Image (tube, rainbow, N blue to C red):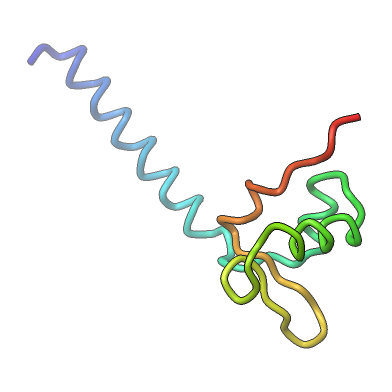
Length: 82
């Protein structure tokens, strides 16, 4: 293996470590309000999508009167195109 290839692999390894650390810092459950704000939707619109298309206690849960969404579900919530 030549030096250039070795340096590329070392750089990639460091990048993967950084990505892993960033993912660890993302909470497992995110509030509906935060998701709505990030997606550019109203909280009611996100709530409606959750109830219609996702499974309670798996994809979202109620805790203390608030709705929390699993981080894996957030990427599946799409904004309606007009």
